[in-house]
View 1: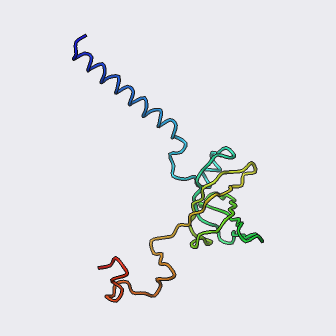
View 2: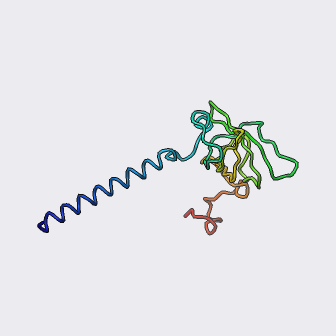
View 3: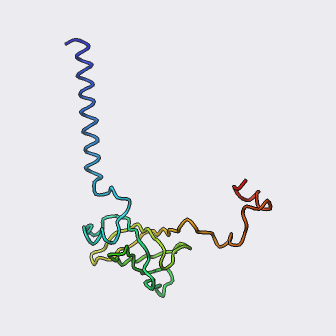
Length: 149
């Protein structure tokens, strides 16, 4: 076989291997392609109990219930069409309030309750930390403490 044919064969085999690896990776990740599940997604295609997933939505108003132990909280996450009950044991983020966005990492138990391992509270673009409320960050007085130039 000539060197030109050997190179062509090697290039074709490499291309087949790359395409095969890409297809295999796409097949393996097809169920995890979305960034997180919404309550509607969980209701529609129920993940297996114990499968690690990420749940995102809004904390329903009036749904937060704190246990007597002080670290366990139960609440409902909604997305407008469906709801999902969630329990979390740990210190909740400062921004975790009713009506705000939340992303929880965890898994469904056998009863359909989402048991969260971590909670991330989301805020909108107008959020200002409590410590900075009432401070004019554009004045020359605070320029050394901010990125505003």
